[in-house]
Length: 193
Ligand SMILES: [Fe+2]
Ligand SMILES: [Fe+2]
Image (tube, rainbow, N blue to C red; front, side, top):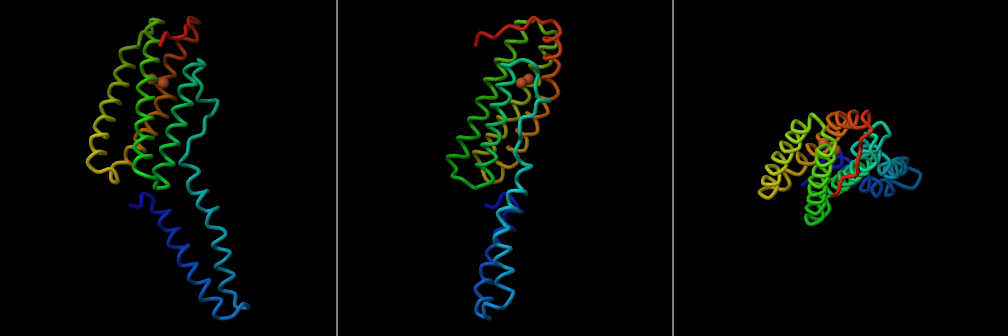
């Protein structure tokens, strides 16, 4: 049910503060307790935002591979990861969570195909090794999707973390290999698909 212990803690703190505000005012408006609790209640949304902000990924120029079409794909992937992060963190409906997961996986597969076509068009020498990484990722995702169908609550956080970590690492690591090669050769072509 609760996918973040921090959020659960803040919810419990909010509930306790609301009760203590009520009890505090019973002791009289000059008693400091309700005012302290009201201050805590006002601060909780800011604490919550601070806690989750590092779970979202913001595009940085250093992520660029120097090829606009691929950068646009990678930016879209980060947007879809953040959308899934929101679906998971805010306990939205199962339908929204499933849709966010499907969109991310579908777009990842579309991007892989486009990227592989680009490498093939430019005779990139490490194409097969790169394709193998993509395929291993898809195999792992298929396994996670099977698990998700059996038990979505227990699987979704693992799936989100795996997708997020793998994709960011891949964009900043393996994708740089073809980017450097293609940019050095200056033989980049827009893929057909
Ligand atoms: Fe990529
Ligand atoms: Fe790639």
